[in-house]
Each structure stands twice: as C-alpha cells, then as structure tokens.
Image (tube, rainbow, N blue to C red; front, side, top):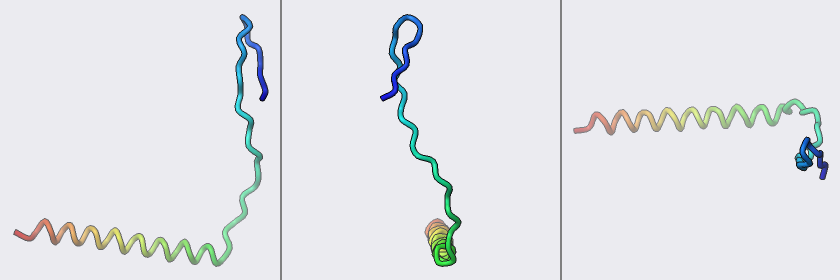
Length: 59
C-alpha cells in the first residue's frame, strides 16, 4: 500500500487506482436487447399508470 508522510509525521494511506481500459461499443445483438428491454420497461410503466388511473376512478 502506498503511504505518504504528511507534516507532523502523520501517515496517509491512499487506495490503489483500478486499471483503466477503453470501453467497446455495443454489438448489434446488444443494441437489439437494449431496445427490447426499453420497450418492455415502457409497457410496464404504461400498464402501471393505467392501473393507477383505473383504480383511482373506481368508487
């Protein structure tokens, strides 16, 4: 672990930095999966909103 000594003799411990790498762009298969998940999420939110509207209007 890298320690540094500050004024007054105090030791300071720094975390080690993770390795840096360049991200790869998504493949066509990943893009399709993101689109499918987005549509499914949108359908879920729309369904929940419609159930909430229906439940609040029922007396």
